[in-house]
Amino acid sequence: MGASLTTHGESLCNAARDGKLDVIRSCLDDGANINCLTFTRWTPLHYAAWKGQYGAADLLLTRGAAIAAKNDDGETPLYVAALHGHLAVVRLLLEKGAATAAKTKRGDTPLHVAASTGQYDAADLLLKKGADVTAKNDRGDTPLHVAARYGYLDVVRLLLEKGADVTAKNGNDETPLELAKSKLHFHVALLLSSKENNDEPLAVLLLVASLAKYAGSKYGPYVATLLLYAIVLGVVYTLFLVMLWVVYQHFLVMTTYLLGA
Image (tube, rainbow, N blue to C red; front, side):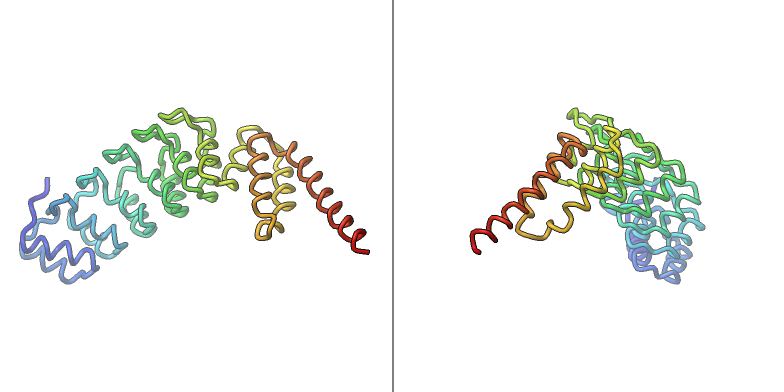
């Protein structure tokens, strides 16, 4: 366990946060506890991870910093680095043996927080180092649930490629698809729907291509409606609706032209 914060300890935490290697060395040489704790139980290594200070993190680890230390919320330095997308520090901590399975008091792993904040590169690295794509937090959410909830399409795609279960349900009996729909993340919901229903990917591409040019126009609300139909009813059926909609728009144009002639 780390000691409580002293004057040397406070200087050490500040130096770790700011990446001042000479000050870190001086504090340690003067007897500062490398695992000293702030009132929220942050260690100097937490501060280095927070600000992405690679040199400071490397020095602290070399001098014996506790890589598995947890703050008041149960967050390890790896979790903090992943939260803020500091890839170099994430990689360093993993190389030094940081546990990808360590959970916070909420049950979140570093992969959960990378997924919930859209940190694609950090999530990719964690997965390559063995992070569990099926891990659940206290709400029953997998990393795929949280990525879907916040609409991070690239992270959702990555998790699916790594074997995430698209049908997994959380504590509220919700699948990732249902979360994406509830938050109106249509782009994510389309991808999840195609995986869940084994829809032809070409159909998805055709649908998106058909609607993209209208997204920023007065037809925007209709586009959103059609995308919602695609999610609920299936992409192929919605293509039929799109075709009818396009025909109807052309009919309106022709009617206006003929009446004005």
